[in-house]
Length: 542
Ligand SMILES: Cc1cc2nc3c(=O)[nH]c(=O)nc-3n(C[C@H](O)[C@H](O)[C@H](O)COP(=O)(O)OP(=O)(O)OC[C@H]3O[C@@H](n4cnc5c(N)ncnc54)[C@H](O)[C@@H]3O)c2cc1C
Image (spheres, helix red, strand yellow):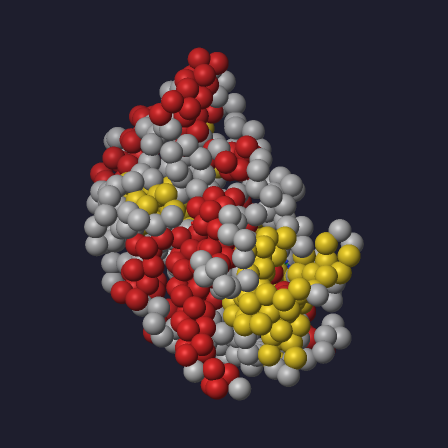
């Protein structure tokens, strides 16, 4: 059995940064275990390849959620990256951190040291922002962050219409506020997707002290006398183990990190007993507090051929797209899941803080991964920024390969339902403004015949879906119920940390990748600080 200083489980958004930061010390041996394979496929590199990669089983594991009233009793497919780079290798590339208040909320919920002012230096440190350095942006980080490099007449008109509706223009959602409308930043380099693997892991893999093992499904953390001492995994039908001298760090994401903890005997007592898992530490909230953004899309049929649906069927335009991408790194091939959008307030928003976020694209599909519609389609969607609904992730078997039971519990509060209905009305109002109304002739989804609150809510339930942002299942906090302390250490077990999207006490208002990268940068810093403290006072460890 091999020995390492640190063992990291999962090479996703968070795991890649943690591996980078910990292996920067050449004396430190780091093992990174990843359930998926290498991220060499071209579709994972091309930004617009998002639409191909998302449900491809070579890159993604598609979980199924429990049906509930909120989703019209359908159950929803939740893809997560199962590949080096994790979900950052298949995500929509929209780079937005969230509202300042999101992080101040974390602090008030007991995550001491995670207020906006505390975490801003980490956002700045991570990024190489193409727009230049200022109070909010950094220029010296590893992650290329780009402004939008595609212009589309329909998107431009939508932004103008949103201003006619009354929203301010916003040139930088990662600056002062997310309120208003404009273009999104994207995590792309000159031409290619800037996944966490490309930005943080690949350079670090040149170091001899960092070992990456792919196709390794971790089944449990080994715990001796209350201290994590290693992990066990399976690879090609064989079981393997490694020991950690310092810490085990779980970066397996908001679905699988709680699954691994539960399989390791850390979780709700009744659940562990039900599945015959020996109890190591009772921690009732492992897997609880699941949050996601629920989205509804309005699909419009444009009356002019200015949709990407049209462009891809025109060989000349298609060739130009390829050339623009190759020669200049511009055009539709550089776009991911969102082009323009922004934040707005429904009538339920408090203190002028946006409670819905738009995502707008000059194309339409039934769902990502399926062909573009043959008509000139346009998609304007939004989600509720601060849902109250909470769900849970529970193992349903001691078998680590079996997916846990995922119950998102969407739209289970009156406020969540009301915000979504009001959001549809706001979006429809925007579409009626004079800058945009002449461009479209039909709302195909959800359909103009649905006008009453009840009809709109029914459409939201039966046609809405995830924006792929599950978080919160191992929340940090200062109260005894929190799974982690604010240093991201698992309560009840030594030498075990969680660093990924599951640590968020409350979902950020925006897409969750940037916040997860920040968590990883800060979390890795905490590990290094503890290591320095232990090195200078070795007797404290005894
Ligand atoms: C389709 C999609 C689109 C998205 N679009 C956007 C977007 O446009 N902008 C944005 O900001 N956010 C987006 N997100 C969300 C964002 O990508 C995630 O919030 C973020 O990547 C989560 O990072 P993580 O480190 O917590 O988990 P992940 O990046 O999912 O990493 C977890 C890793 O752990 C591995 N793993 C899991 N279990 C085990 C195990 N037992 N053993 C070994 N390895 C294991 C997985 O294979 C994976 O590589 C999207 C997500 C998806 C899936």
